[in-house]
Image 1: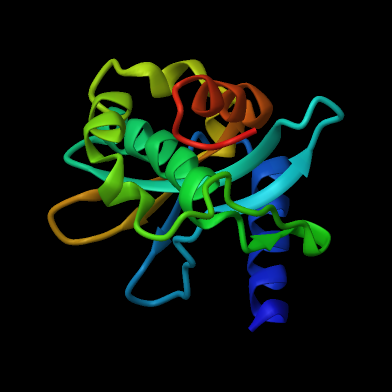
Image 2: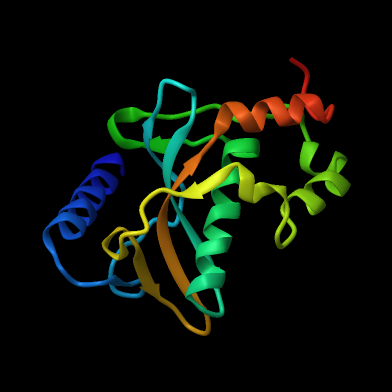
Length: 163
């Protein structure tokens, strides 16, 4: 399974770097497309660059959902797939934390919420984005830079996690 993902990721990178097309389409019915968040790199300051997917009625909604999904995975799931075996642990280990702090995370992930301060689009280059055709909604992938240490500090200050 990991080799298939590595092949797909390698092909995606080759298409991204080699083509001049604005977007790459993936037909989700005929080709395997993993919609999991994938770690691409980490920085010395503790931030992480990921490729995340989002669904929406249109491209802007899907890309914004991808940003929320990237943060959600960093906070609650950790990143379990990555280039060269790169993975990260979740920021919150507490069982059912999402339900326990539902009031907090509903405001955090709301439209225009605080989440926008902790995840930025890494590459505005159109070739870094992929579209998977689906029925009714658009699925888009983009590269996102998550400020993991700043996010962790915020969660500590707000009493969600302990230092």
